[in-house]
Image (cartoon, rainbow, N blue to C red):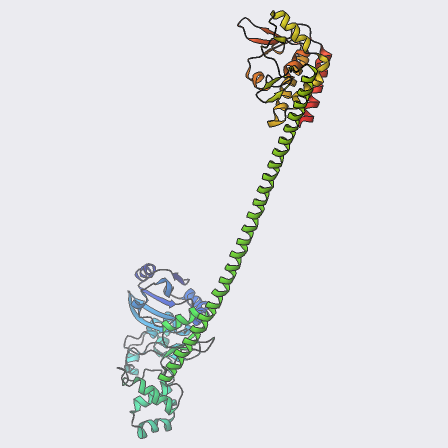
Length: 512
């Protein structure tokens, strides 16, 4: 059956509850031996008679300690939820033996647990309890079953013999430690086995560090060597525990680790002082680097601020310059308009002077509210101061307005430059005359209400405007309500209307 991957503590609990006999492999993503042995482990699971599962340490959150796992990979065999045996390390052959022959791997009469080897080739056997004597041959023969397969199971040894590293220790070194230095044989053997190197100095150093340990006088486990630390295969650094291993993996990104029998030597006081000084120097260098970066960033920000201020000042100056240009142009236009108006008034005064001289001191013009208007429209003013009938007055007015003077009337209206009033009057006159020229039979274009606001504000105040309308054929009349109108009673002169419309259009263009 395939190797099942579990992703949470609840899935692990369900797996162990659903399977009375099972093997659970505790692994880690950063563990190099775990990743290297994963394909072989999957092959073992595919042919295993009992279910097998794998769970990674990050999936167990804080429950890893409940399973007493302190190294990766760790393979634990459970029966009815109880741990029966475990294999620490990437010893796939031992896992294969465990799942293939549970009776041989787990003898009921005691024995040793199956060992494990690290990815670096160091094998280690964890002792559960001292081995009991094996049954005598007579007992084995008496209980031997009849089948050949069972005979093979009985004759096959439960475990392969494990080399005893104690036997490989140098007798001279043991003699030096025991006879000359006074250490017990057990402690001398442990010092040579667990010390950093098979020398008297390393053994003594290890013994001085571990002489107060509770298990210092306990027998050496079968297999002799015991993992003391973890080693990074990528940089060779020795790490004392899993926490330091994880810290190293997160810091460097290394992922290839193995168990090591070499213990991590604690730093001496001098080494600690040097290490602290080194760390302080590193922190100072980092601080200086950060300060330099911040200083450079501050300079960059200041330059940006100054450039932005310069750009804003430049933009403000451009806006102010444009505003000053507009104001200067407006003042210049006002001065020019004032000069033209003053010249017009002077010319008018000179004309009045000449007129008085020719008429024995009399002036036919009238002073209006907008200054001298020598040909001002004589609204409701009797000619020559003589009161006559309406018909006589109309005849006099008709005689005064002549088609030959249309150009003169247009020139007088065009002379009003202030505020563009003359141009507005010309446009209204063009509308009156043009509408009549285009629609001579339409009654609404044949009559102009003199009380209309457009007429009163755009035509009536300007000299020559009313005379132009009278010259093209309009006559002034009152309606039934007594309101004055300019009415086209006769058949309009279409040629005159067309010519006057054209002249008004040219005057409007020239007026600008």
